[in-house]
Image (tube, rainbow, N blue to C red):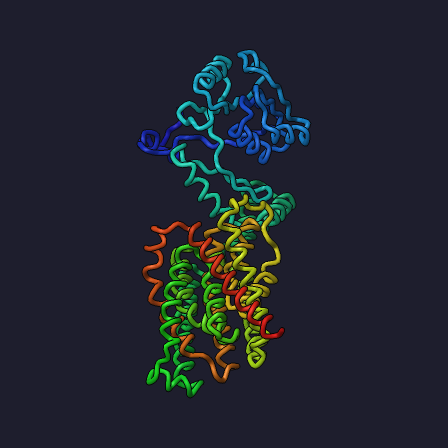
Length: 503
């Protein structure tokens, strides 16, 4: 008998408690006959998992009631057979693998015993203790396939790890595998020589910047941007506009209106994760603030909140850096362009206000719709035109005073992007976009409504630390309905007043 220690295996390893003792294998289901008992929701889930990984797998589905979706799969897959009948012991005579998804404990026990009598491996859905094997979470990028197992303890954790790996491993990895395969076939010599050459040629794959150094460099970028943001706000109040210097000596009553509004609207944003831009813009327009000044107030007040949120997501590693780079530059260009155009039209605010009000009216309808429409399943195809999305989102956000989160974040998630990484990336990029948009507004506007701007900044800053705590105690749907209705009513009011004025 060979020595255990010679193969780097010790008796302690074999008897170590609390370890995952499952042996990972990849089955060639195309060469096996799989029998699936049960064709309800659970059966459909198991069948979909099998066919997604092995589209040519030979599967026989046995059940009394068959979901229409399974009939559709059978029509598209000639290897899939449906037998509508009650399960019998003899149905496993020609099986190689058995999956029970009936949801009936007695029937499942009968299926398990029938499989054991024939020495067949069996999986009983949602019953880890009765399973000979598990259908784990799978990450697939072309020819690369990674199976994740938690030993049946937490499928939810397995799914979260799957999301992280799906987002972190680029789709181009399949090209790398193909090229390395071709390279391997072109090498000559014995096995040791081929390994040596492959190691030498693939060493470049790990010769990247040290993670700690890259993290340190970005840390300086964040802090530099925060200092710049402070300088922007101070400059806006003490240097740019003479009226701002008089502000602290003679605070208008409008300041207090916007102080309260900024606090309440930031609390709402903390509760539902959106709507600060659109609600504060519609409120500003209803209070008679021109669109450019309203948008500037929103952007200045969002610098701090998004800076803090972005920093936290950065610390929690919730940022997809490739996605961040694709969004940042186009988003800034779009924001600068929108801010420049809106500021240039400040003298024509009478005409631009109804246009912006129409935009906030539409966003109010979107918020109201999201309160009632059931969340749809994410698309399997990720959105590809990220830079174009960032450009359009930045432009519309600057012109309308809000919408970066509503447009960009919702598009990324609907397009199949990981929600957690999308949120962290959008929040962090929003900080830079708000900062650059604010700089453009301050440069272009000679006389801004600083009482309203200051109220929004201070009010939202005061609400930020407590918004998360309060949000847990409030019904999200109720808030979204209220926000949608309020935004639509205030927007309609501005549009109606403009029409009456024209008439």
